[in-house]
Length: 271
Image (tube, rainbow, N blue to C red; front, side):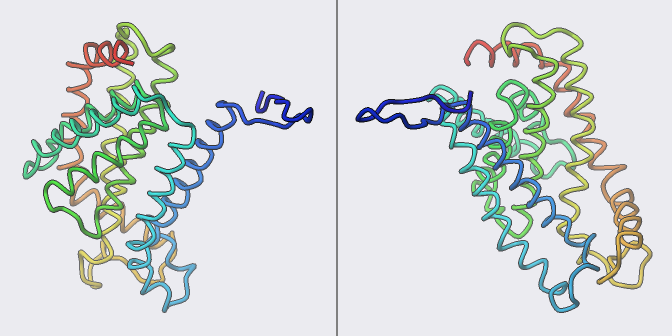
């Protein structure tokens, strides 16, 4: 039920239950995620914009993405998670940010994604989304890494955490106890896919500016999907998919396979 009757002065009124608030929160997160995805993908839909708007699109994205991300984080808090979950979220965000610092300067060796996948699976999609975004924001503040790339990284990491939460709902029913081998293998497989998709998403922020206009991999202003998508995929394949993204996928999957059971069991007990 989405509402329960409450008598006030002899008159019944509808009071929203936590379930309704939770669904509203999830809907807002989904809506802001879709808006964020559309904004991140501006280079691929540039043909739909007037030429003048297309030239200002990247700067508009830099301004609006933090606002969209803030709206998503606010939506998550609408369902008022219990204090223990919020405290756990804060600790995990700090740990994930610290793990990111450990991989700074080593291409693709990013242990933070191992914890993000496991924690997202244990916490669920909404808190997993929040964890990914917070971890990126905290680590950026610690390393003075705030720049136009940060909203892209924060959204991409948030989606990694949310996706892990969705996978966790399927392979970790109940969310407590020691997970089985199939659950760990499923999360490791998800980690591989998420590592490559994270690389693609974060490549979008600098691809239009990385190359001149005279190469086969360059962004074509005003070009359609049929023209720019193959160029973007070829650019990503040449610059990150076969190198940094593959290292990230291997490191994350190996971490999940090696540490998945004890980490998930610990998170299950803490929750």
